Amino acid sequence: MSSRNIKARKKLTELFRRGVEVRFDAEGGHLGPFLDEDGKEIPPTDDQVAMWIQPPSPYQREMAMRDAQAARAKAMLRAKRDENSEEFLTSKAFLAEMTDETLVEYLLLVGTEERRNEAIRDVLSREEWADFPTLQDAFRRMEEQDGDPESDEYRDLMEADRRYGKQVSEREAELADAARDSLGYFQREELERRALEQRSELSGSQAFMSEYEKQMMFYAIRDIENNANLFFDSVDEWNEQPEEIRSVVVDALTLFIGEAAEAKNSPGAVSGSDSSALPSEPETSAPSTPRESTE
Image (cartoon, rainbow, N blue to C red; front, side, top):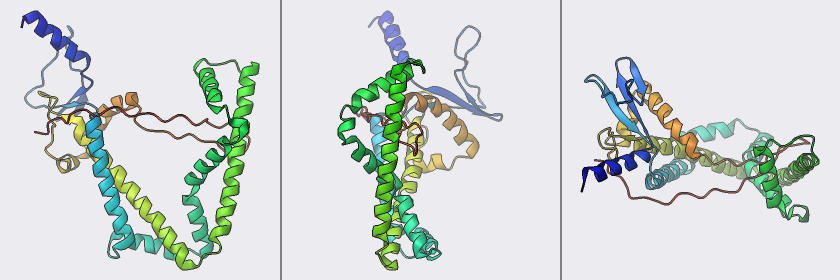
């Protein structure tokens, strides 16, 4: 292969090298790129430790998701059945302080998101909103193009948005009243059982997010010489690093997380006559790629 082809291939690879170099020394962490006045890379000094930070691959995200789901299942099991676990004891103490009325309100509170989603589905099933996707598209175009607030189209869209939000809020209130009436028929033992179930869900969600974050950060930190290799040998080794190092790595990865928009938002209607955010269509995930080396 000619030297020209080698240089061309190297240049092509650099185009898709989405990441940033991070260097640590006695003064703290520093984000790259590290270039001189001529645009040439400045190599790290002997007293610096260099890392390459880039978003995990789709396959690594899947692995992080599986590990996080396992952590969630274990936390939920401890919270519901292990009477000696911190999660179980904390939940029992939390519930013991509540009156029956407070327990009912707690159960209503934790069911808010589910009722909101049900209210949205009910409203969208009405004939008035049969052409809702068209309304969404029009609303999106108006926002992107900074539509004229004085135009008839803008006022019509805002009025439709107000009606939609009002209907969702009213339906949600109806569902909450029905749930409150239903819970009022249960004995204390059943209310505590349901509340304990909700507390276990909360413990599971917290464990899921903690494990997922650790796994994603672990996969994001690569060897500076060979980006296919991970920098740390294990998630535990990464998790033991001091906060000074962790915060710099988070800052570096945030540059790419913002671009990828991995966080899934679920906008919904607000109460009263305020304007609501029209629900967006779900995104699709990227296909998996082969796992990169951890050696």
